[in-house]
Length: 396
Image 1 (cartoon, helix red, strand yellow):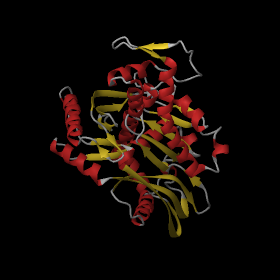
Image 2: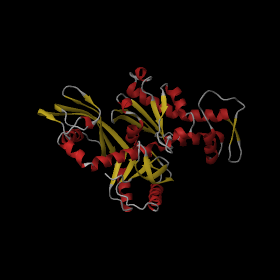
Image 3: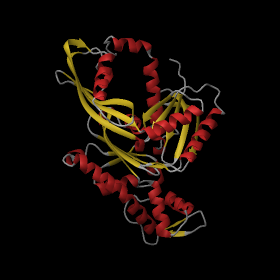
Image 4: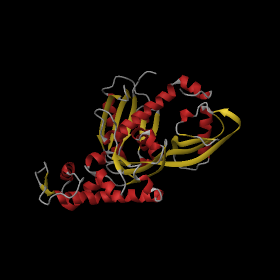
């Protein structure tokens, strides 16, 4: 397969990035064009200003097109958690006699599970937490199933539905720009598959993506998302608290947040932050306390989520399965992961792409989407692999 670029539209809760990238060497990527635009953002109920969102998408895509000499084919759109509904379903396929599993058998299992669901929206992707055969052998990878003889195939399946509101808006907008081939990827799923090692996902893994307007917490198992919730909490909530409690403008609040660090214990009473804007002085202790209190709302939501689904398992899982934290909140608010760990009483770790120039939590979603899109392209264009799968060939 030619190592052609794939196009990614990464939609975050305060900015949009359009990029063209291809697979590089040793797990790296080659970025052939990228442009980001800030916009008014969205909450769990939808976009604050749809017109502003559309304009930002047009500007981002146009900026890349002006410097890219090649042809842009399909566009892979990262769907934020606020517009995705994840549904899990256990389903079983039985065969009259022992047979070697093929791609058709796997597809039939997923299709059968989907037919039993009555979820709203369009199903944009499906994955599995794990599969088991008639002898109860467990498999996490679909590729490991091809060619295995069995009389029964069970799957703990996950289906991802995008809201009609988001789907129709994106398809219409990109269609007006001349892009008819639009593919959707759940952003959280892409991040989970890219940022969390396979071994960690063999058990329950946790991912917290802290954005500007919204944040999401997800439970990941195998190659699927078991539970997920989205909150209207993020960097914006902290900035608003600083503005209200200190009586300052937005620009000054951003300046303060950039300097603040809430990790560690209390700071000396005499310590101060001096903003570059207007050279104003603020008590470091007071600023830190305001930031911590603002973050506590997010901590409470995460704590409720964990106790709701894993109340009986928390003690056994704390030491082995930390909450993996990523997103712009980690870069914007220094000490966030440590504060969450203390408030929720759960170990945390910061995750981000292990790449030069993109080794920041703010790059997690765009790089993860790029990785998943490239993987999809390889699966769709690898004709020899498809032949083996269709005839039950075992991948080597």
